[in-house]
Structure formats: C-alpha cells, structure tokens
Image 1 (cartoon, helix red, strand yellow):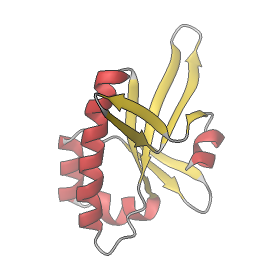
Image 2 (tube, rainbow, N blue to C red):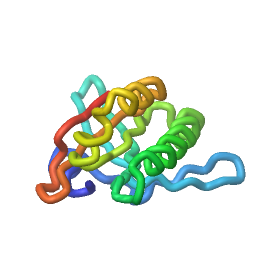
Image 3 (spheres, rainbow, N blue to C red):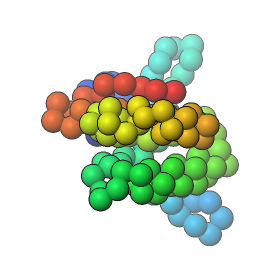
Length: 128
C-alpha cells in the first residue's frame, strides 16, 4: 500500500500515524499528503490497511468498521482536515464490498475506500 500511494504522488509522512486523544494513543497505518494546487494547499489522508484474509470476511469487516469509526472520531478531534480511508485489496473489494448489504453499510457509515492491487502495488479505486 505504501508503494502504491507513493506511485500515485503521495508523500508518506507517518508510518504509522500516531494520534493522541485524551490519555490514549492510537496508531493508524499510514499518514500521507500531497500538493493539490498552489491555491488549494495540501491534501492530507490517513489510511488504515486491511487484508480481509481471515476466516470470515464478515468478521474482518466488523472489526474494520469499528476501528474506522473510532479513528474517524479521533481525527475529527485532532486533525479535522485529514480524510480517513480504509484500504482493501481489489479481491476483497470485488468479492465482498460490492455485495449490496456490505456496500450499504459502508455507505451509511461513510467509509471511504481505497482499493489497491497487491501484486502490482497500485491503486485501483478511490471511493469517497
């Protein structure tokens, strides 16, 4: 995922991105930024990477959704301009995230997806 982001023009600023919220420190897999245009400044993202290779993709999704929600609230408090993405491999996206129920839950929870190809180390889709 790191190589895919760098290939897409992102500068990895944190690996992992550490955020202090109260007495708790959370670690999101990657923090990255890139210049958009001179008048717009920088675009900043945080990326939580999940493989979805466990025994149950549904169980993996439950865990990822909870983690995503927690991180989203933490970022809103500490770095509100940074967008959070859940990075998933293209195989998991095509076999699980395109299922109507999964897609609806992800949409309702405003999960931004970053779909990547593992072997090619490239980003396939940004879903906001």
